[in-house]
Image 1 (cartoon, one colour):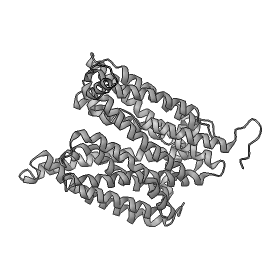
Image 2: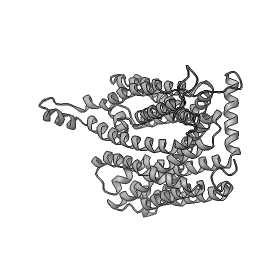
Image 3: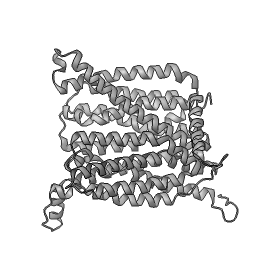
Image 4: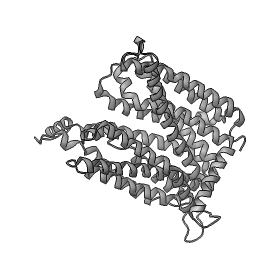
Length: 450
């Protein structure tokens, strides 16, 4: 039976249920963007060069890194809902700039797209951690925090479905031939060109961004206990306190380090995945369907993650994820035609389970007053590690090219790419071994050392 609070106050259980529903809506629409399957070629078709596109991605990553932790501290001090709503409005602004930037002024277009990427990074940073912290604490306030794994299970499955739909529809509406054929089947003889359909995925995402704002506004804030007035100094102390807590908590430190070890290598492959698919002789027309198919792995990931959590050993759970990652990385260098698609499946499953485990263990261990800040440290660490992995891979390619110029195995870019892939499982295994030797043995069963 649900017991209502004092007159004039919201029912905590009802607020928790509402927060869960709208949190899932917000996350799904915030992350499943229709332009993702064609993002690179969309920017290029609009007139940007590869160099300009690379600079835009650097600006996006820099905005996230710079704002990730400060936004988490502000969420804990000012209110998680305020940051989530702000993230929703930033998404609307971001998509509006993307949708209506003129194509006939190249210089202005670049600067407006740069603004788009900075706003996008700021939106990612503001949403990261704040939405999870709000929902978890609303469950905890009514003694239902043990339901968080089931919330994550629902979220992962809805996100998988949303990403699948976005990948298929986004790629379809970008293609003028598909749109022309759809109109023909509907009895309309209109013919479309690529210049007319290029931004259709963006327009769809602009429409869904309005729903993210509505979902954020429907969230109910959890009470915040402030020990001091909010100021820049308070925010700075909040960040320092959260960082000190993480480094003083063997469990939290292990979870974050184990996460970035796996996440950085998996995301590195996702960055160069299209090159790998081409090498295993898959036609480019299938790439979007491959990405959509990977999204469906999310339906199986919660079942695996919940059983790993039930073992009450974080080291064992992350060990299983690392084995999946190692198998995936190890198989890539063989570049087996067609059959080689099996190995990215291991990486996709590892990523889905990894996100579930990390959210569960960090929310379970975190100090409620600093929860959003702590979760933002996770986001910061993940993005920094991903950047480091990219630099590592670029350095590896450079080393192979310069130290073995006469080696026939690295004469072509494709061969160089395969040789570099062969190094990744060994580097990953060395990192993971170091984590287990240094950290895993200190945490034992769940919560040890905190």
